[in-house]
Image (tube, rainbow, N blue to C red; front, side):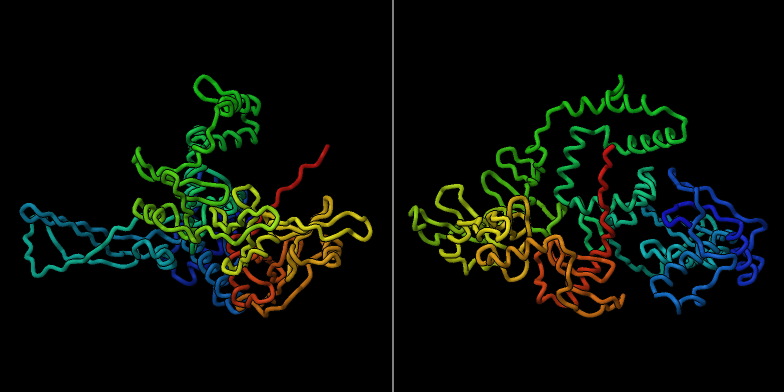
Length: 527
């Protein structure tokens, strides 16, 4: 069937195969008189396709196929097999009992459960796969009691239980929530989950989606200035309207006019866009209500930071918004900066001091009080930054020489994405031992000539421990990366291509596989 369907309709072939298994393997007492048909509760269910179920007119058991597929695939197939067969079995019959016990001003309550007939639970119980819900198959038998019976207290046992806060969304539970709210389609859920992670609105921490400060700032801006458009009810109703337009039941033009220009009861997009937005204010997330000395979190171009008055401190990446209490914010504000300003020496040309500084966006060297400054590369130890090295950085971009054919000058410099060389409108990234300070004209010409060539293999690291695919380090257009032939993971200046280990490469590939494929934007064709 269609892999993204959320239909619960089964074909006659699937129903007959399920009923045959029930009759042969479990007995006629578990087989209903007639086939069972279900109607989906999800508002936007895509039911043009059949439900996901075992293939064929006769369902193979997991034991028949587990030797030819992996353990994960076996578990998934078994889950699908159980749910498919269970949905065609008779209902379970349970006897539920609740008893209230009163003693003067104290009241106790207990409940019990007895399974009279297992029914579909003979095959499948959801709580066996979901450890967060109690096992429905576990009986809790209570003694036979009648109303107004007197009980004696033989002993008291105390069981402590702690109420836990609601768990953070996982990718699966977030999709389930969107389904319940009528937002999105099976074909769009994957792109939505990928997008909120690519935009750094959430971070996947061991399966849990943790919102970032950027997410709080964006949500705050949208709710304050575009509130009708981010209302869940509006989104669900809009999708219903678009479906009606697609079916030819409604005209598109009146809908678009009302959306853009508004109506007597609704504010249109045009009026919302005319409203002036204070972007710096929208980036502020208040942490306390002290008007005299407020503590705020602010989202900057290079990450979030905490501010009180003129004091600013970067928020460590490991801390999520939920971790920042007032006490933690004060602790961060009271920390001393990573490095105090350090005078390296005087510039021989101007006599001004060259100062080593650490700012919100990393370490840099600065010439006196001027705006002449240069960031220090990530792999440089600040303890080894000398006056000579600082002068070399401040002299960038460096003129390497002329191209032997075009006679155009070639420059080397550090940019936002790392070291690079430039000739006219042509750029090429520097990779390997060369830096903008020491690259030769011969090497620069070679890099410019090869910048559009396909990636080449630098090293072979060995086989992935699970997939057994060979992991290799390759040199691509945008820098070195790890590849197993199907998935590519960038090294992002975090690892040296010459020293990265098989274990580190395996972790990068696994992380990239968990994120899913990156959706590329297609260019619109010119008419």
